[in-house]
Image (cartoon, rainbow, N blue to C red; front, top):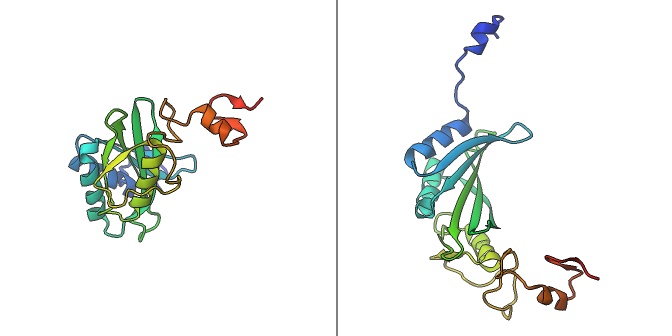
Amino acid sequence: MNDNPINEANEVREPTKAQKVAETIAKRFPNAQVEVRVNKWGRERVWVRIPREDYKALMRFIKELDGEAHYSIGIEQDLGDELGFLSHLAIHYDDAPAVSLIVDVRAPKDDPVIPDISDVFPIATQYEREAAEMVGIVFEGIPDKRRLFLPDDFPEGIYPLRLDDKGIPEEMVHNAGHPYYIRGGAKK
């Protein structure tokens, strides 16, 4: 450590693993929004917002960066006019700590198509199936379109986690014996 505060402030620091991954992705995908965020525990995470046209190419690139990349989870979102799908991955975990990576891809509700990535990360199929039935994202090329959680006789075109008119109507929730209305609060 340098005792001179002026020199210490001017010290050039090596980029972290997360910063290096972010720079590499940003160079390869100039249309992506890439940033490194620090969570409340001081841990860095790389966030990538990618146009859906580049989503599959990005996921293949991540696999090239680390052949042992770990796909942790996919999370669907209703974002108003868009539907979103977040993928969490861990890469370079052989040299702890791993780089935590969030990939955010979105599609407009009137064209909710996102490319399937199960040929790159086979485990993604289960999360894509969940997102398809819960918010209505269509994963182009998904090899298994069966429902994951909802029964086969559940009405088509109704998505339990949608916040618009395609979500579960209150009378359907009431008839199911659910103790709370989705939008109306507690039952009276």
